[in-house]
Length: 298
Image 1 (cartoon, helix red, strand yellow):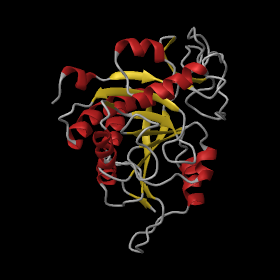
Image 2: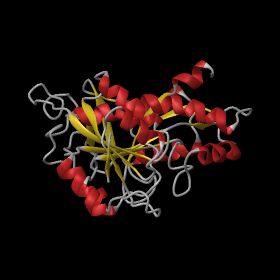
Image 3: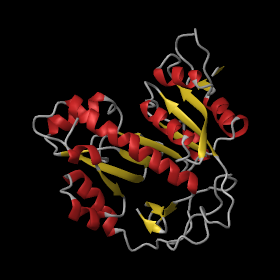
Image 4: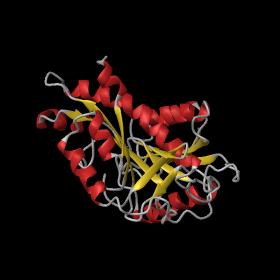
């Protein structure tokens, strides 16, 4: 149904971690075991070509027609290609602080896109109220068990995304439901999520919000941070695009960790969305996504 619409210096800056930069980042900071595991896997697979075109089905997008080469010539973001404003759909279930940071980044021109639609399973959540205050259309999915609010089916939502709002990219910002497989397939490699821990650790069904930070503190981990990843048909399992590592101190409470991680979420997520809209994301042959900035891997 359519509705109207303080920490230390180390903890505040974060360390940007993309999926292919293990050796360089290893010199900058001591990384947690879970992250090193992911980086060893990425390093083991690093023989794949970095200049191959995206293997995902991206035909028909207004935002870009190809992906950038390592030299920065041709592909998306090239001066030869006209870059249009991408239509973004943001899915929220709560306060929507990451949604707000993305919306602000669109307004100031950091992201070459606009939030064309907000989708939520909670009609009265903070993200929906923010969207209504800013005249952004909202849709309710899935249908609520309470019949007071009419929701949409997956087929209806997919039709609205593709035809009514012409959405190019879907961004999950604290959305607690699994995305229907038909939408994942239709938006192959065009759905991003942000998770408040360094995946693959502390992820999966049931790991959200403060539960994640409680698990991090209880584990004794010395690092945490947000992960931006592409979405597949499982919780928190898609290819990792970027991460930021922040320290976890022995005296930290889950709330301390949450605040430190959230500051980095509001930085790294808009950066990744901007890269996606600019066409600055390419894919290795082994399925690892790569961020580009000025012709260089980030």
